[in-house]
Image (cartoon, rainbow, N blue to C red; front, side, top):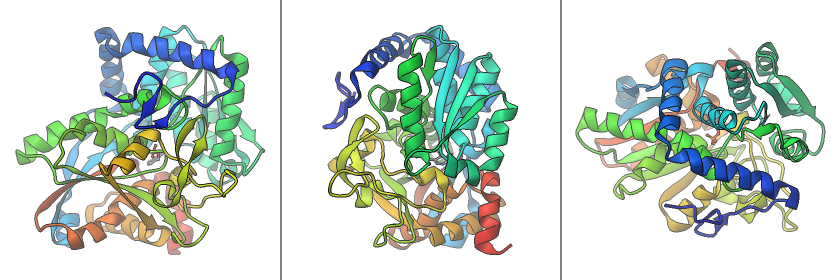
Length: 393
Ligand SMILES: *Cc1c(COP(=O)(O)O)cnc(C)c1O
């Protein structure tokens, strides 16, 4: 099972960090190995996932959406129904339990849209840990409500003023804090990117999505699905759905990136569709960069997809052809957002709306009657002000 011992997925990943972080990552890896196959850890995590976060989430047959498309049978994996409104809580619960076993008294995190920050602030409150979240000044402006939620939960939100004042700069600041305070501090990383062992840890914690979905779809249809579709920012909700189906070679994976204003403009966030191999945040993967390796500015209508890199396991999936990566524009995503709201009475996160929007294209080329599972990674309440502006509601 990949990654290999040095943290590589088919040549992607690794640990490109300063000397001072190496021992922190080694300590993290040692402790994660100890809990990974420990039944008491699995039991404890399952308890909180079920009793606190609301798992298992339903696999809902979207009859009206399917009828409106015509050729697909669409099932929605309802991660939007989880506590705090997205899949992020699966990972923060796992990592906070690991932090407790490591006797850390403080947790830190980076956040872009604020969803991972809120999920981290939530588990910190639950377990009485001190919590600091780093957030770009630009994102603080765009996502006020999530800043207030974190503050209410007792978390200190530190504005990041360097670089583009967004997620990538917040990750840099969180890493700096971690180096200085590694004795008492655990860094809860938010997606399947970053240096080894984070891509593996986050994948393992998010794989509960795919394990449940595989069981549920089999119970409902007596067979495996033809397609799995998920949006890709850093890639955690997609890997979480895909990974348990990895060896089911007939199940096709489709990862949907943000095409923003269009793939032929500079305003998108499609690292896999348009990026090149480079190093960002301690790992080798596909990155949006200029020819000198400087990280490019990105754009997406959904803050959660607005990231210039992607997890190394996705880079492997791309290179080996296991997953097809496509991109959907801001405008198409808004259409998906409206379509799911009107057909099923479910307002999706704008990130998840990218996956929904892609169904229109898939519907044209898939065999009639194909079964599709779409990961509904989050709910759309956080996006209402964006929607009001875009749709002139
Ligand atoms: C954060 C977020 C994403 C993007 O992150 P991934 O790691 O790619 O899953 C997608 N959907 C929602 C609802 C999010 O909050």
